[in-house]
Every structure is written in structure tokens, then in C-alpha cells.
Length: 486
Image (tube, rainbow, N blue to C red; front, side, top):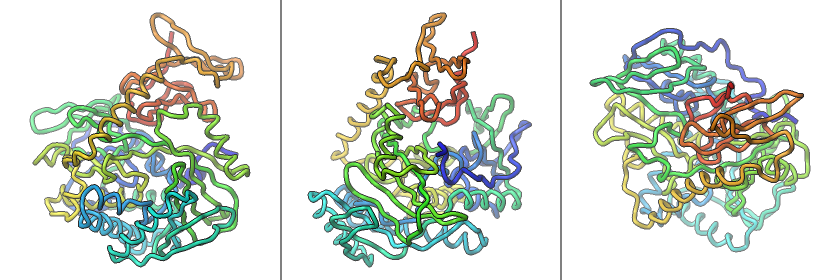
């Protein structure tokens, strides 16, 4: 059993180049997941000088840890949008997801990308008798939205279901093979991609932005934040506009079926199959707010117990969940095309990341996009969402407070300890007679870190930054390492 995403086990990424000089560009895209690469691909034939940077290798962040579904059937999203906004809002979102699905298919066909694309039946199901009526209501709304949807009652192999609905025109694929193909295409078109290149500071100078790495500077006219969780908080106040959900995934050798499943139960389950050199069942469950269930070793073990089978690969992912279930894609400031953001995909990153590619590239090319208002980050949520704003604020406070109180958790082994050294709180992990010391404080917003004994990483329970046992920053929004040297 390997603690790595199935998609990353044989990463086909070749010849990554890091920034080694100061440069100027028209547009800087920060983040090399499906959002950043989709934007870059859409701009590859433009006259804009576009540069993309990623802290690590492209596709190895959130995109490389997803289930890899290309799907517009998304739990009970359409009745939520109708109840919160209107029928037309739900219809617009449905069309946006279908357009995103078609965009991925068009690119794969046009560019002849080999990424294990497979057409599948998709199901939303429940094992909660109290959720059956909600799911039937979702079917009614889908039919009103002109979607051909069917009832289904029966098992999915060993997975029980009281009631389900299904559609026939959805897909699954290998997300990292797709992204690395986009990378190669963009490089051949003359666009610049720098990997292992972390932006740690941004300064506005007149009408330009100076973006600094540890050793070099990029001067740009426009910035696109395509980095999952933005590493700024003001003026956008992102922590109260969204919360972070974590989930756990595993891949088990299993005969392939043309099915994709997701439940609407409190503890969600998402399933798909993948065939490459071997056949796998990909199983996701145990979703919760990032500030809950902090014993990560226990979480991984509980996931394995769900199917009572030892997986070949097991990993964790995080998703940004917005208040009204719509993504944030577009301008951070009104009438300002120089700072753009794309985030908040509510577990539907393949479609919404592709949608972001369409919206952001149109904004940069001064073209109208019919989904721009739908996903506008500056939209005013209805007053019915005020409870969600408060809840998000409480979740942020909860994660912070829980991280500060009782650091020596009962689940830690003797390998993990905490000490105050020279006035600093230091986390210590012992392995093979060696001590690894880190500053037990996330550089992003100051939360104390939780040691994940399964992955041997220091994880932030507030905003999902992750650090190696040596203190190297593996995942943002933190921009800095936490290595402690006495």
C-alpha cells in the first residue's frame, strides 16, 4: 500500500524547467492545475505573452488527487440553486457544466490526447430513507431542465443503494495525462511554463505587478490566481466566503465497470473505475470540514475499513466549498481585469476548472462570456446565506483554536512531541534515531500544525497547507517553509 495518488504513481511529466532569471510578461498564471493549464491552452494562439508558474510540478496539486470525473450530475446541486436563486440560475449552471464537459472532449479529440477517456453511466444514490424524496425532487428538476434522467433501484456490486437516479452521457479520464499533454502543447506554441517556482510576494508598482520568488522577479500586467486556495485574505476576505472540505481516497485492484457513483448522504461516497495497465476501483469517502477529525492516521484506517480490503494506493484531497455552491471565477475587484481568481469548485474541479479556463481567457481577450455573471466572485449572496457566512467564520476560528489547545493529542505516538525552544513552539518528529524539528506555526495565518503520522507530514487544520517532516512547504496557501535550525 502506497500513500500516493493513483494518478501520480507514474507521473509522465518530463523535463520540468524552473525560473532562473528575471522576466516580463503580459499575464502571469499562478497555479498549474486544470484551471491554469486550461487558461493557458485557450490563450496559446493569442498574441499575449503568457507565463504559468507552479510551486511544484503541474497537475500534482489538487487536480492530481481528484477522482477524475467529467460530470454534470452533481449530487443535488440543481435544487439547491433553484431554491437559493432561480430556475434560470440552475439552467445556466447546468449549461456551463455541459459546455465544460464538451470542451474537455473537444480538446482530447482535436489534440489526440491519450488519457484513458471512458464514457460511463453516472448515478446519484442514497442509503438514507430520509433522503429519497430529496433525490426524487432532484430528478424532477433535472427533467424540467431537459436532462434525460432515469430511476434506478438495486445494488452497485457490494455497494448498497435504496434509490438512485442516473444519466448516460458522462465520462472519466486520467487527469494527469490530460494536463501533461496540455503542458506539452502550450510549450510548443511558445507559452512559458516554470515548475518548482513559488511566488512568495507580490508588490504593485504603478500599473504593473512585481512577483517575487526566492531568487527572481516576474513583472506582469495581469495576474490570475489559479492556485486552489488563494494565498491572500484581504481585501477579498476569502476565509468567510468559503470553507475547506477534506476527503480520503483509495484505489483497489478490481474489475472495471462503466459506472460512476456519488451519494448525497451525510458521509459521502464517490466511486469510479479506471483501466490502464491494471484495473482499479477508486473509492472516496469520509468527507468532513478540515478542522474536524484531526487524527489522520485513524481517518486513513477508517477508510480502509469501509470496504474491508487493503488498497494499493491511498491518499487525501481537499476541496473549496462556496456558500451558494457556485464557483468564484473572475475579477477580484470591480471593473479591474488585472487581478483574476478561479477557485471554489465544490468537489467538481474537472468541469469547473475547465469552465474557469473559458471565462478567464475570455476576460483576458476582452470577450464576453455568458457565464461570467453566474460565477462572479463579487456577486452578492442572498441574505439566506448569512448563516453560512457565520458558519465559515466559526469553522476558521474552530480550526485555529483546536490547533492551539492540547497539542499533545492522545493519538500521537512517542515519535511526536512539542517543546518551547528559544521562545518558539517547536514540533519534533523522531525517525530512525533522528529528530526533525519544525516551527509549529503555519506561516499563512498562524495556526498550529497537526502531525499526520500516516503521511509523515505537518498539516494545517485551518486552510490545508502541508509541510514535509523536514519543514518544506508542499502545498499552499502558505508560501514559506517551517524548517527550524537552532
